[in-house]
Length: 324
Ligand code: XIL
View 1 (cartoon, rainbow, N blue to C red):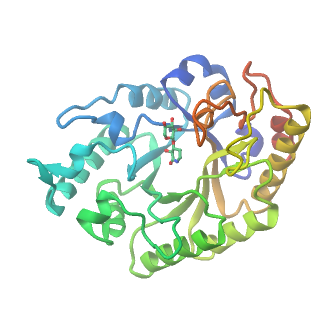
View 2: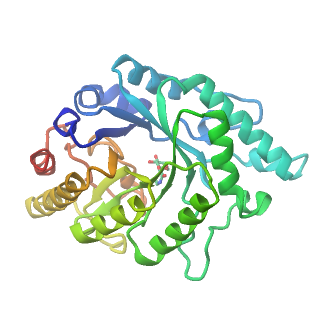
């Protein structure tokens, strides 16, 4: 797949220790870049103070190196999957100085170990609130460092990873109210000269959303700020987010066609706007292992990717390749 789109953007995939074992062939054949689905997150890298467990991340980085793939580093500053000890010190809340030191240590270790292969970092993930009337999401970062924490994270990343491309990454970027807030945040940071290269649209979409016009307007709005756009976590759920009670036993041929249509429309739009889009990353490899099997409804099976549980290409795969 990556080669088919080489004139437009690179194609990537999120992988983890188990997909590196079970889906290696698909990964190597189709992807030109990799993201660690979990293994570069602070919670996995240093779950306890003083512990440092980079072995899963090493394995993924080595696969990328072996095949000349770049990596998207995911993710440095996020309210989730960050261990509690980052935010506490001697039984109380950490001071801003202590938290900044920990971030500096974390960024430096990541840079020293993976700086040769990671070309882009999701520096800040999901900082904007979904709640009406609330701008930034409540988080220990916001509590301890105040609302400048986003700016500080990007400045720190620029100092420690001077050659990496730095991204702000979020979901629901095509939701009008949330998009306005993200736009306000990023345009404000850029005006202040904060080093930010691009925006990641996570792209956790579904068989009914988004349409071409909504996607195109979103891409062009952020591109007009001079930002690079990457689709960082693409999957197309067979359920709408609000359909929590629906449970399919298997995807029917009709659903697989709807999914192929949605993927086709998404990729046609991305290709038409490829001067603004540098990478498109799928959040997983094949339907045998996807985070949507547990989100937002725990234990419910989903089939959001281009390859079936047996790794054969689905109608969506052919639709995507034809859009190149
Ligand atoms: C998810 C992983 O896919 C799961 O395996 C993990 O249990 C939770 O995190 N937005 C993000 C990703 O930025 O890091 C999340 O990944 C999915 C939502």
